[in-house]
Picture 1 (cartoon, rainbow, N blue to C red):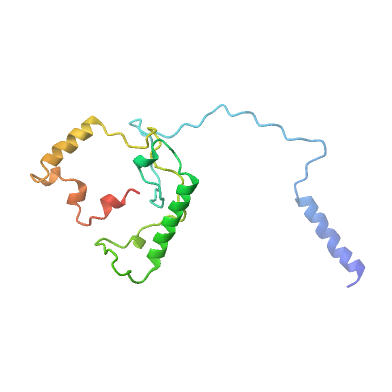
Picture 2 (cartoon, rainbow, N blue to C red):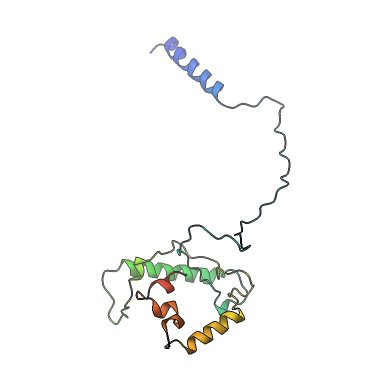
Length: 177
């Protein structure tokens, strides 16, 4: 291919690339954007409660409430995180096994590998972050209702917990991590 032909192909190609690329003029700077006067407010329901609608999964290793051994700590230490990751890896290995080890306990529910499994261990100690102890506060009215229902749980099905009424035994406990 002659040099003249190459130049006749390359020059228009280079010119079109330069013309289509954004080039700012020398000496011009972008004007700073004015600070936003609006602050984000979380959505709320008509009752005033936070709107938590959305798609939620249970693919986390973080428990809903913080276990007592973590106290008020929000995150695992590096050593605890490594151990949590090892435990998750052991669970994944068990999910992939075809047979049970001798002396292994056999459960009556669905196998754990039928449920969602986290890809990586979480550093959080609980999903609940307020109050600082990471535990869901129990209201006095809820305690009274629980005690009342427990005392009468054999009188009528209305007083039984969803766990006792549910035929599958999997859903009430399986909905929360």
